[in-house]
Length: 231
Image 1 (spheres, rainbow, N blue to C red):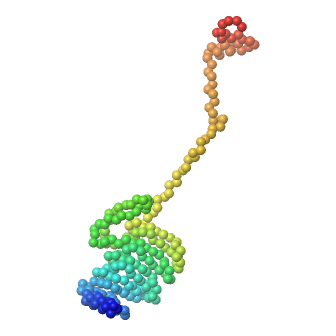
Image 2: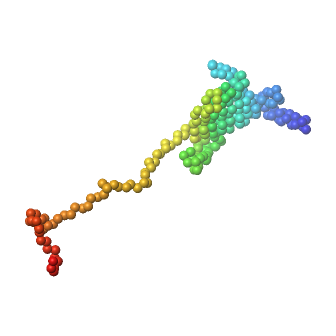
Image 3: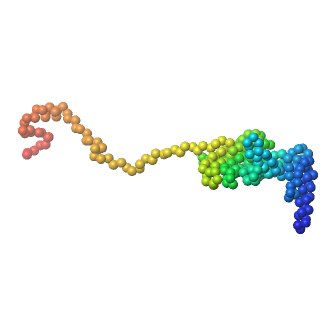
């Protein structure tokens, strides 16, 4: 069984090599750094970049498809430490990207790759202001990646999250300011005695005023009220 598996691997390797104009064989037998007859990079690749003009060197490994990066790529410094894990689609960054410093994560990014074969693309996304609502957007495709999602920044050398940023189709999301609603009291207001309207002042007629003036100094005044009969 093991022999059949080994033969299958050899046949696949020969098939890949047959498509390659240039390539190299790794120590484990993998075919690396293949270029086809159209001079396009295909399959597994390792890339070495020397230090230059103060910029640190690095090594990368991942897969090319028709000269475009595809899937997961890893980057190491020249001492062999992992410094980045990136994901690609159609040759552009897509999904989660992670960057490391001193064997600890430094920050994370979220990207969205657009299919360069399409002129426009329709995307559904949740409304950040209303999680129960979805938004449909038609976006012009220009063959690139857009920042899309939550970016996280960590304290160097630890997993302590110190800052986040949210991007929506390459635009930084800014939350709407909270609206403070002033609450009104529902307790009924009890008015005190000073709030009660005073009784209306009686208005005296001209005849009453003359009568009071005429009899002001008399001790007893006979008042006729219209009743009949004796006392």
